[in-house]
Length: 578
Image 1 (cartoon, rainbow, N blue to C red):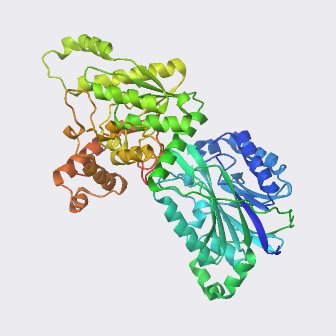
Image 2 (cartoon, rainbow, N blue to C red; image 1 turned 90 degrees about the vertical axis):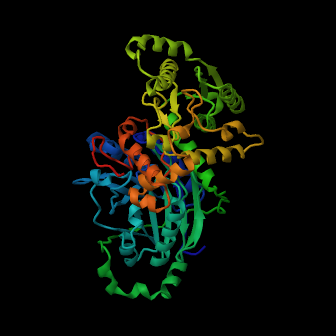
């Protein structure tokens, strides 16, 4: 084995925010596995020790001190290997940092240089930017460490580190998932590796944290921008790669760009102190066989919803989940995701028919529960519905029935579910989708009542795609075919249809994407070929229901711009996009 070759391990860790002791054990277990497989270096995700994002926990001095103490304890368990671990460092300020632990001792620290402050990120609120970019000489192997956003910039710290002699860049990430991000990451990493003629090893967190889902998918790119190792999406895993640094040297001999010192004026040059480490050279076993089965685009989203739901429920200590089953497409998909995420024994479906519930919908709900193997309860709301109407009869006398009587049914169902939740400690999973959240086609304190909104960021058209995809994954469909083919209806009045209140979803969803996710004006959306009256009505619905969304439970982020952390608009606001 060449003196310029090295075995690297990349950990896709599912840290739990604030669980410092648990995270130490998770990290130590992967350190042991990496060492046993002959890895000389093992790298962990950004802020693996604290979990990501720790948010205002880092404003608590005790939390910072506890995280530093756990780092010392972890270092003592890392003999015979170099481990690179994300943590919160404290000097005259606090930093998003990476510790380089070598043979049981803290050998060096890197502080994140570029602190994202957009979308779901608020790192400028908490951390100071780093001012150095150290490199590490592990015998004949020279490597550098940076963190997440640092590698996204063409003129980031990697440029300074490469010019100081680094041939291997270890990049630690807590990069949240959204649709399409995987291919964007791949192109960026390939470009950085080729431009710097360096091997770039990217590891990423995995698991759910409130609205965010981290998809893992660790990758290693060689000096020519070719992917040479990859980890699975949405799974904890330890990925190994045997790297030949001599190939980097040969590549640089043929790349004159690295001899043009005058280019340094165009980059953010940083001091690059060099830290020398003794080479440990553990015995190597044959490289473990690693196979990754890529997920198709719809399967990728489905997996994200499973992981986000599973981790929210389990990390918050709930024993099971409740889903109100209407026989419609949304509740059917939520119940299916819950059963896949938590196991059928941990999910209860509750049918709460009213006078307007069709026989077909009640049977569809029952068939779904039977197909999934979940417990199925029927609790009619008609007695309570009539009692409430009787209570309000004097005050409502002389008025025509309207949304008040319709939404009363939804609120009674919310009451039933929350009462069962209180009784047994099960979390209520709401069933509203992004199209409904955007337009206000959901009842506050009714079908919005619950602890977690699985489909909050899933447009209605994607709900159908996900349901159809899931039905193809087994020998028999789990979601009844009738659910996918019948016209959507809230069934809160006779012969009600969603299109009575909203444009058809294939028309509505592209308009919502343009307005909500892309911030296009009404005029721009009309120019895309949409009817002006429909566009302006849709925008008005979105604008006037911000107050509802502010009161909605958190839900899994799967689009580039989700409601909540991504999109923050004032409730009291007289600017109208239409």
